[in-house]
Length: 333
Image (cartoon, rainbow, N blue to C red):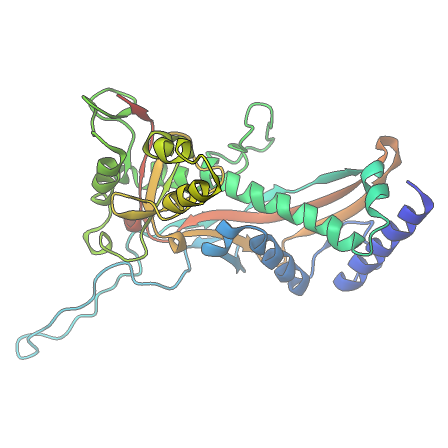
């Protein structure tokens, strides 16, 4: 790297070390809780989707879902002349458990890129921002596609990070299979169209709502997360009809305000192919363990790069299984 780049890089090391109260950021250290919280906030703020769900720090590596909420109806009446009132215990209903798994977020940055960025006054923010944004996207990808937590992950065979952690969809498959529809009249698929299990995607979504607990089915904050490819046929005419700027704007507004089965559509990055999910966004959580983030920034001249080694103990949690349903393997009839 060039001399001015070296100065900027040294300034970065000194600033990171100072913030974390360590002598050197070029040695492995535990990120202080205050800095960890700021980093987690930055990761969440880097994604519109992560802003809408729960991203929470927890003290324990293992435990039960913690978001405060009552997962069932509680209204009623008791004839106290005959018996005592009995409060409804809803704490154990549809409760998920979590186990935070060590997740490596290691980033290599070539000298050439550092040289290009070194001339900017916001060098440190620019470098940190690029790493934060990638961590944000990876967490979403794991949340929807993760099926296991392998001891040695393989990006070549699991390009959507399927083996990094157990995500939300897999949690439903394992812990609430009665709320997952994966096939219809034909084994291995749910079909839409003339002669299919459902004539329209709207009909499928409406039926999926019935998989929720009765007291959740008419909640005002329900949304449907949907694979973009499934919306192709529904909105193709609007998109192709956009021949000028005015029509393009109209088409984008139609899609943005569109509904399926009476529910607003949530366009979630990296959502599972050929699938939908009916839930509230606050039913999806990512837990990170406090005081468990590790970091080591290392100059690697043998590779003409610096490496930022970071790890965090993370878990993906469903707060209330009765507040969601999944339909997968959706195909045209």
